[in-house]
Length: 366
Image 1: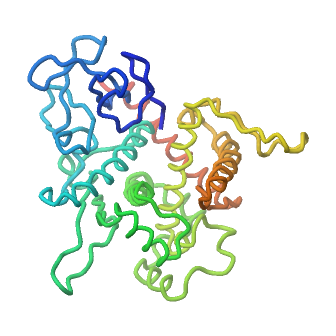
Image 2 (image 1 turned 45 degrees about the vertical axis):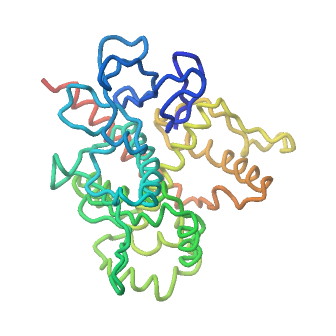
Image 3 (image 1 turned 30 degrees about the horizontal axis):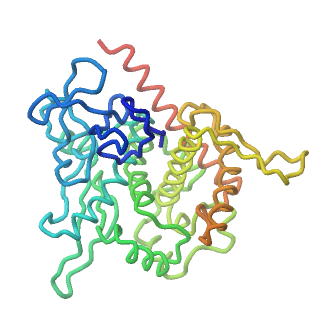
């Protein structure tokens, strides 16, 4: 995530801010410009961007619930922003606990959508394209005794998230029960949208053979693979080829886990780049520069994956060391073996190719 600044007073801002703490100006995120901007009221909940011309905007309709600060052009036929128009089902808003959980989910989903927009990946709602669009259901477990729990997952472009995942205690209990090293709300979104983009970028675009060479044959029975995983666990020495134990389940899950980690890398490196960070351990051997890195390039603009991974590994060592100093577990509890680097590079190359194709198509469009 990039670092934002109020262009009225210079105050640094968080992505989720609704108003500037210093000057009090209302703030809104403009998804075309990918900027968090101060707003000047015009009339009847209509705003102009401070010192930015005559275009007018209104807040997304979900702003009233405190879950969205994104802007919609006043001439847009939709009441919702690019992120919220992906919602198919939201929790019962008469339940304050559900609203609080929905806010946590929306904060994570908006960060996800920001990354997808920066990557210039195809992003369209199922309301616009029922066959290839994307949609979200945010559901609570049913209250009826014996009714099945809501399962977080993806099917044909519909991502279902159990709002229980927004509860820190429930999520931590699930993490321990599933013997997972890492489990976050944003991580869920990144993983599940990885399944969606497997359909769009791999299956639809004819990249299956290249995919299978690295991840395996996705035609293997998914149900059987899942059942085997939960019965016997991951294979021995799985750390040599997979980013997580769950990635061993099936090639689709390997892709989704790898995809999620790619988004972890790019988004965190953008934050480090925005802060002008560098890593240079003062006790390191002068001949060993493997833990040194300057976050001097926007990761979304790096053409080769080497530029990402060579910055990422020193940064994660520093982040984990800082967390340990605070008495916490490692912020990034993963090891990236060479085989996983290959898989991450494949994700990177696919995304860059799709971005290039989109750019070329826009140049020839009438």
